[in-house]
Image (tube, rainbow, N blue to C red; front, side, top):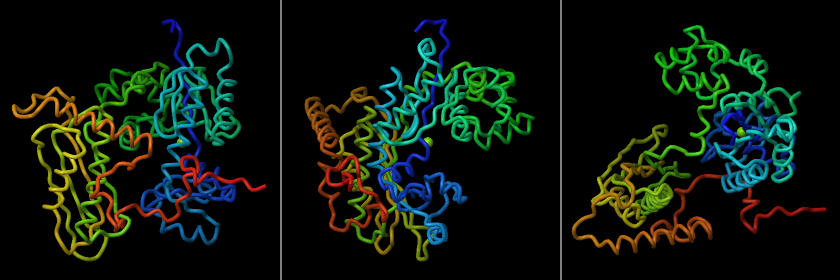
Length: 430
Ligand SMILES: [Mg+2]
């Protein structure tokens, strides 16, 4: 890239992603209000435009929605992450077809680097091209916001979603347009500001995005933080987040836990759940290319149910840092046994791994065999490879498979894995 060339970013963001996936594969859902529920069908995590129009809020508990189901034909879907994950992958592939540098930001949004593209095609035409390609490849609707910094691209995308006249694409490379839009945008809606910061800013007379853009960056750094200072620069079209986007910060901790679909009352079911979480956490740890030096396990009953409450957590410093599933499972199970108290109805359990180390950087014990260590790592790599090719849990630990699977998630309205399981492929009826 020439150094005198101004950088330009496009933020491509799916509209109501999970709800759109459900409507895509079930034509009867189209044009009707649809919400997707969180794990265990707890609360709404996605809403179709029709559901938004009914006034259903993000995070609203599902049990509150019965009235909408009866009066307005609201459809409630359990979250189907196999489907959303696969559609997300297809979305990213379509974007990679459009631009050489794609920076995925979440499951349903990614930044493209469009620097220099305007010598070939206008930004607006390019945005519509991306939108159309994604529609053809995935069948899903997106909006595109184009601007000289990621923070402004976020604002542009927000505008594309809210003003139908834009037909889903906003080119915000022009400084006057940026200022006009920022003037209309409450400071709370700026990427990374949020409610708490916006209250403090408001007290200082900074009410709109434009007020923030016109603040002195140095003053902002002294009174807030270097992160807010970066936001001020970004609002002035100076990209500060562009490098951060490509490398997610290294994780400090891995937590695997879930509420049980039905209360767990026997030790074997609890150990099955703990083993599953420990296996999953170890796999994540290896993906980060780290060993962990500390492991904790926890379990609890529900605070919201009648009956006696019990919650406990216990951790240990491992004799040697490791990412070996067998080691982690062994320690997790022994902690779980000591935490277990008979006679309670448990609703949650989980595993936390911390104190990360780079593998091999730590002095190993005098008695341990280096060759054994390499052999064990090889075994774990093979395990990960098989599970990644043949599907997760193809190889799992015996304890994890327990007859009583009540600890698994409750997913009463789960749609089929349309795109990732042969038996679930949709059939067209003519
Ligand atoms: Mg979205």
